[in-house]
Image (cartoon, rainbow, N blue to C red; front, side, top):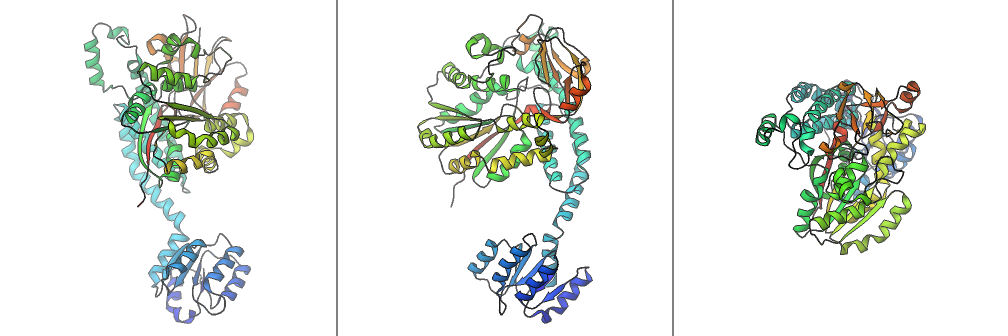
Length: 535
């Protein structure tokens, strides 16, 4: 370290203390010599006196930043004048010490600024090690969807904590997440059909005898229908409108809970935030899940009641082009007269157009904005080698997401919303999972192309690897043919055909996919935010 002070000889005891702690201390008595030293070598930290003859501490600081912008500088001063502190902080000092300083103060600032990463890594690893066994027990004891939501949030917490360090425990956490996803898959397999069965219908032959008995069995198993895609407007949007609040609903396609957590760090100082999650319907794909949100209906019901607004898998038409009309059908069904707007942003031109209209939106009770970037990023990562390199793991994928946000229309929009009277809802239709494990499946040429779910006739697969819905009507899903089945991939698996198997696997392995069953795809954020009152 470099210590710059015009009274450096009076600090000999401090220097000896630091040298005994293993630090090499280079000393100079003025700013000019300090700049010369920094040109000659690189220091881990500079302690800089603010009041010196010749070049002042603040001027030295500015020049130091030009020579070595990454070197942390700690300002040491007798003055407590606010404007001096403001100037120093504005010049991005690492810390600020008031004279007289004692050796332990200096040691603390050295640890904060030189050893922070090592200390954070050590403490974080220790915390996860202590929590590891508890998480394992919690996975084994999960009985309800709330239990699974809690465990997923806990895993995401440690995922974010460990990814911000140089930890070697990320592989251990990944194994634990895979174990949790295996348990989650079994839970969904056992309970999903009960959640989505048509009203008044029995979910299985064994339950047809007595509905009351089935309900008692569900209670015993801890089966309770969670909030799902079809419930978002009814349970979240409409109550806010009924309370006289104006609502701004932002639907970020393919937005995972971990991505929300990093976004929350960016906007948390602007809003009071209420964090919740809900369960996406199957398939966890836009055509099904987002249409269910906007209509408040399961896909089979949409196809039945509004055939002009539903597009089957085998049709070439875009699958999410009727979202505004679907919102209107839900308002009409509930006999509501709320005025609303609907906008979708796919590119910068659409973003600019939307922002030009922002001030006009205040006349509406409800404004809905769909943002497609993350879904586009996910697909681009599959198709582009360069994007795959940029987002080569979960942490990098999150990093690209937050980098996009900082330079996107959303960043500007949130600043405007923070100064408005809107209640802001942020949610998504589904998440995604990094698919690493191929599972063989055979189907005819009419089978859909999604890697995480298949629907078609005469599908062949290993039953233990998948969740099968043989009767789509029982899950309120459309059935293009009488013999149509739906098959869903579990955990981090993806479907691959035996024909040209090796090429197929190498192309799609390690890509982010959705449509199947995993915590990342099904347990997704539903966030309520209100502008934080200043004062």
